[in-house]
Length: 449
Image 1 (cartoon, helix red, strand yellow):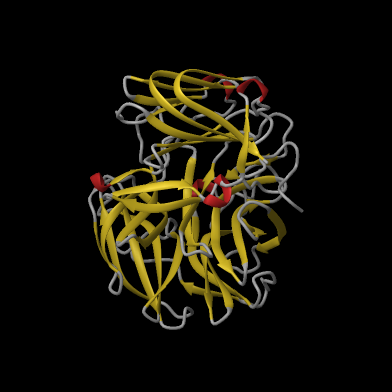
Image 2: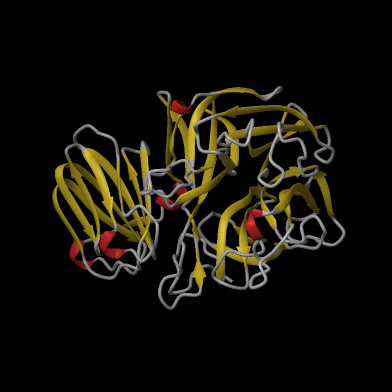
């Protein structure tokens, strides 16, 4: 089944129905792109986590596959949380955080009571990437952490695996604190293996002040630099912005030993819209480093049965010491048919390419992009039914004449600024009214031919 329903995005993957969140196990394997994702298949709300599964030849057209992972063991009886994938001798190895609740509310056994659960790390092996024997092929690889100085018994999760010099490595996110009066500090744990099955702890790094629990860590080399992506809980505590946000930065990293060094100021938010969370990266078939994140929603659109979507795939590069993310060429190359602004149908997927100067404005069916005082702002105040989100998002001060590419899909807008210097993604109500623009030096609209 293709993700092409009328009341769904055409280019942003959703679940067939109900809840999805983090992308998991992103990989190009045996000629197919595989996207697994956190999924509660029974309702449009968070619950006992399964791994949904979709495949694609091009990251444009996705086909749903049967659910890949679901709870079957004592250690994962309450959920198969986020993780990653790697190919080992032709087989597909999936790693995930296995969860066992210590208590549950009487009225909803799909969630833990008082945040009480045990988190360990597990794996499953598939011969072909499609068949997963959840009863016989799972194994526990890293037990729940008992040492409070090393990590957290409950909040240690999201194994990201990679290979380097004939060894395999896993990075995990956790949190620690020295005593009960202190706030938690985010921490990374590193493990190493010769066979990708038996793992030993080798290193760690912690830093106070960058949130307090580092979800979904991902470290990789691109253009001669190491980039670390984190999704810290309580990154913002201003009572205005969503508390948990994805950040990235260039770090000092020695890959063989996993010695890590960075400062809080090395990091910035990955996506200014603050809907983008839990990104994961992988290598596409052309060797590009590609990142996909969850564009989160806290309630469905009216009369819709799905909740949450994946971002467009983004190519990650480092240029002049800055991390740059641009929409993948498999997506951007689709938009070749230029259309007049008066004939744009916002129910279709469209791309706007424009050069903004001070006092430029674009109104996309109520979603407003403005460039004032050398700052670009995206404003969804008039077209958003979501709660506890950033209604307006702005860049830092920019130079005059900023180039933007705006990708509009059903229920979402992604704005790429200055060739990937910044990205701003916003969930919006499905847009229907007309497109307007003023005071632009260059403005073109494209649809998929």
